[in-house]
Image (cartoon, rainbow, N blue to C red; front, top):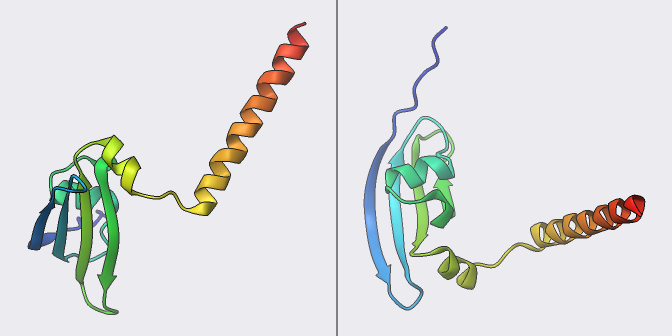
Length: 112
């Protein structure tokens, strides 16, 4: 059984260049059979996926039309300066860093 290709039709409702935060802000209307992913959205507006932040995807139940709020930053440094990291993600990163340091100490002690 062949897979059904997801055809997306998009329309840029609003495009605003925010010079103070060094980013472009978009509001899109997308017609698609499934929820668009971050990768799909970055391909629609032809931007780098690492610099793209999807703020909100609004879809109505039973309809194939989505309203999407997207922000595209000029550089990674600009994005890191403005965007905050959620608490759960931040805690997970700190825990992984501590675990890596502990493993490195064990390996160093085992080599002695």
